[in-house]
Length: 104
Image (tube, rainbow, N blue to C red; front, side, top):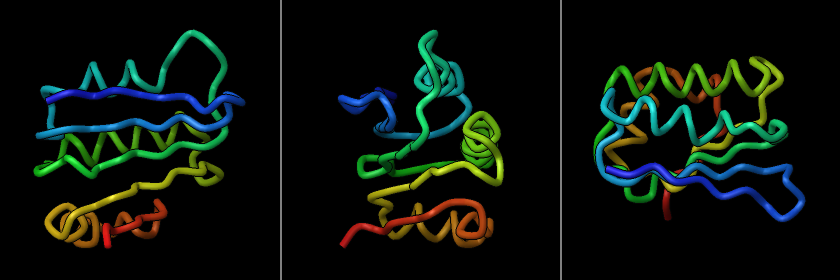
C-alpha cells in the first residue's frame, strides 16, 4: 500500500493517489498527504485507480479530508473508481458528499 500526492503547478489542486488497500494502516500516510506545512489546496482529487479495497476507516479518512478542505464547501473528486470501490461509496451515500467519477 502506498499513498502519494502531487500538487498542481499553481498549487491550487492536490491529487492524492492511493494504491492497494485503503484501510486503517494507511491513516498516517493519507493524513500526511493533505496536511503539508504549506498552504491548503483549494481543490482535491483522490485517485483510486489502483485501489482494490477500502473499509469503514477509509470512509472516515475521506470525511476527515472533507472537513479539512472546507466541509460543505469542499471541492473534492474521487476519481477512477473501479466497480467494487464505487459500490462501497454508493452504499455509504458518499455521492451526496463527494463528486465520484467511475473509470470507463
